[in-house]
Amino acid sequence: MAEVDLLRALPKTERNIQKRAEAKDAAVVAVAKQFGEMYWDGPREYGYGGYRYDGRWRPVARDIITHFGLKPGMRALDVGCGKGFLVKDLMVECPGLEAFGVDISRYALMHCERDVAGRLHLGSAESLPFPDRSFDAAVSINTLHNLSRERVIVALKEIERLAPGRTFVQVDAYHTPEQRELFMQWVLTAEFHGYPEQWLQVFKEAGYTGDWYWTVLEG
Ligand SMILES: C[S@@+](CC[C@H](N)C(=O)[O-])C[C@H]1O[C@@H](n2cnc3c(N)ncnc32)[C@H](O)[C@@H]1O
Image (cartoon, rainbow, N blue to C red):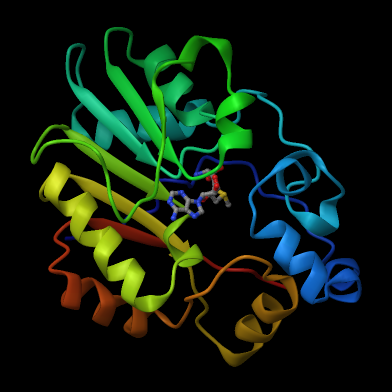
């Protein structure tokens, strides 16, 4: 188990935290939590504000491939794959790698990249429809915090089951009260979030033996 920043090569996201906070209300949150068209391709107040493939995940894919020593013929899974950009880039960066995804958003899967159509499964992280140890690596990026604490533990057990000790999860966290305040202004869909020690306790309770990193908002 190790803390490792596998998203270090991802360009920083532009965030107007004040604008998000002003627009946010229960109705906006409810729409965002459907992970439908408004979340992906609607106004920024509801989510991504338009999410199109631009190759930004390619260097992240390279780092994941190196970290897990992935080779052609091996199998990798992205839990919370969205439109499948990372799944595509894993296969671009390691031709012959068998990459797959799972996501709860039918809209995202219906608007995935053509190259990954058929590789993305509709489902929840809490019930992954694959046999034990059926992947050489499994990652879940900015997804698990969308579940309640109890459901996060179930999902972590599922990820662990598929690729014991060869996994990576990145989740929303904060190191200071100021970062927590910024996060609370920005957050739309997350149900469980916390300081690193709170997450580490969750990992422990789940018997999670993989790697992890935090998404932290800075002012
Ligand atoms: C912030 S997006 C991250 C997408 C992608 N991993 C990335 O980093 O660009 C959160 C993702 O979690 C997915 N999601 C939410 N709840 C989920 C669940 N219970 N099981 C699987 N995916 C879920 C959403 O549909 C969405 O694709």
